[in-house]
Image (cartoon, rainbow, N blue to C red; front, side):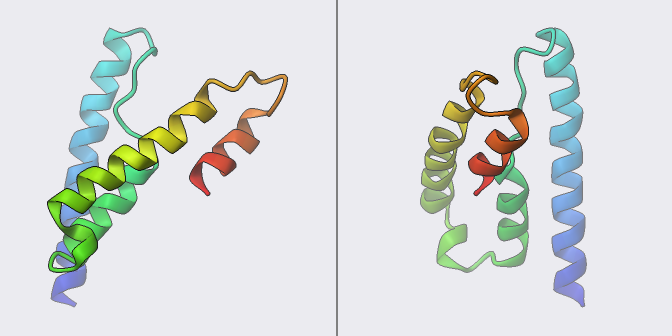
Length: 94
């Protein structure tokens, strides 16, 4: 139960701070820039729940975020005429 509390509180506070920063970044850029993407929630949970696991080590985390960003970002630039936004979000997450 102790590790569950640590995971929840760490992920919650981390995402709360990032959401707060994201709010100001989006307002300052008139909605053009955003800080939070889908994989960040999974990363937070992984970091706090499985700290000694190989997937939680810094080089794997950095490489994983780069790869996931390279996979997710192109979906943002597909015009809505080809794929509706709900389908792009599902494909990018999958």
